[in-house]
Image (cartoon, rainbow, N blue to C red; front, side, top):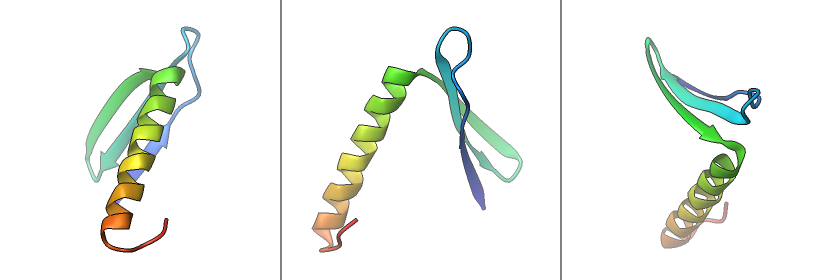
Length: 57
């Protein structure tokens, strides 16, 4: 099982987001604006993939 997490912005406005896969951890450091942009891109990709298989997300 994997765990996805996002922290609160630090003093510089940087969020920490990542995925823990059992004992392996991957972390991404992004600003809030970058996180929003990434979320929007992921949402568009998911919606496009869902449309390809005829599902609504």
